[in-house]
Image (cartoon, rainbow, N blue to C red; front, side, top):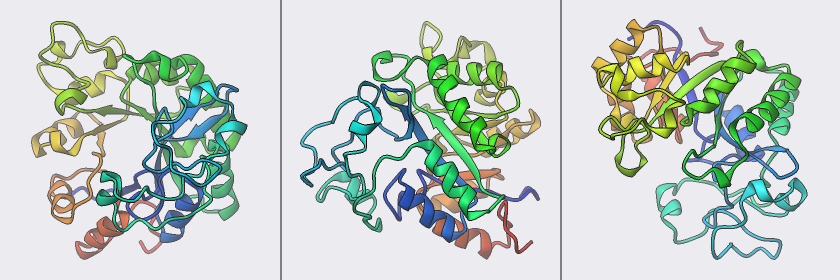
Amino acid sequence: MSKRPFDLQGHRGARGLWPENTLGGFERALALGIKTLELDCAMTSDGVVVISHDPQLNPDHTRDETGRFLSRPGPVISTVNYAELARYDVGRIRPGTAYERAHLQQQALDGERIPRLAELYALIDGRGDRAVRLNIEVKTFPLQPELTAAPEAFVRALLAVVEASGMAAATTIQCFDWRVLNCVQRLAPGIATGALTDQQGDDDTVQFDQPLPSPWLGGLDARQFGRSVPHLAKASGAGTWSPDYLDLSSAQVAEAHQLGLLVAPWTVNEPAELERILAMDVDGMITDRPDLLRAILRDQGLAERGDDRV
């Protein structure tokens, strides 16, 4: 196992414990001692960078002003202004959904709104914990450009918030759409970037076996890298490679390390899988259940990044 402190990342705050991507959820994750918050961002029609995984309001955890769960996906976030967006409550899972079955331990926090990214930075600043980092995923979709702002406009708005926060050095920007990484690296080369990949079924962003280069890879052709995803990720210019954990092997982790990449797979939740992936010598993990991963790390005597005990 690498001797560097392990980067335990709370996925969407700590989605397995509290409502995803909410200030209340982030605050509780920080109180739990989580030092890296992973989150997603979108941008409203009036240019406000907000924290949301879905480009449309998700009926599985969104209620309207009357308290009723949405019956279908709500408006596309990029088509409404922030004042309109703030009317919705995202603090509770809709009962009886697959989402609920996947997160039975999640505690509701009624009244939570989709927050502005600037509010999360302010929350962290108010706590005075200089060890906290953010890993921000930009949600853009090359095959569905109508769902979000264009990559460069989105990145410029995001970078303005990051730089105003004073936490640029404690921020990583990651994306499946490597056009976003290209923009960040060109506009703010001092900000860390992470290359996300997925090779599972219809969600495959690498597309080794397709006749044309994947639209997700920012102009790179996966076929030119000897079927090596670590070499492909290195070519993206990112410092961290974050694959779907189902795609990962120990040999790939070793290869990535030889290339100078950090490896932080997503989204690992079950204890047996947490232990299996940890044994691969990864540098971090993105998980809905940071409490479970922390217990495993401590059982194995492994230090977390930012752990003031070591």
